Image (cartoon, rainbow, N blue to C red; front, side, top):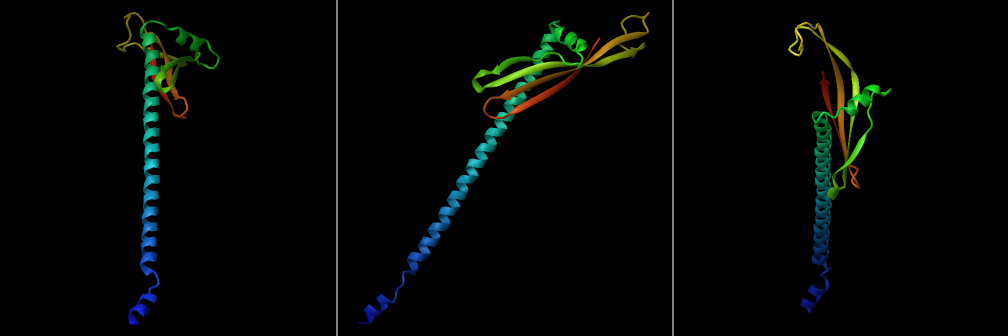
Length: 157
């Protein structure tokens, strides 16, 4: 009879303790999954930001290459514009990732270099005219909200 009394007095403490431990482990697992998802999103955002930055650099370089090729139409257009901006040229940078780029020139003003400068090509001249421009290249990745803009300053004589 004493064995029966001892068995009847057990209240299931082991079951309750194991359920609490299982609940704690489940909460730790869910928190770990949330952290992993957040880190993955941050990594994707960093990659998208880097892609658009590199594409914006490529856009500004495309304009620079255009100028090196002696196509100065955007510089002339910016000088004649009331606000100093040329038209914006749109193009696809990376179709696979949905990255679109633009470039534009902005006229900043005329500069005068005094004689004695190494840029003064004529010995008889006392002044050499130059022009300052700001070249901008931008890129946007569709569906991600990632955008970047790069500015480069140049002087043209």
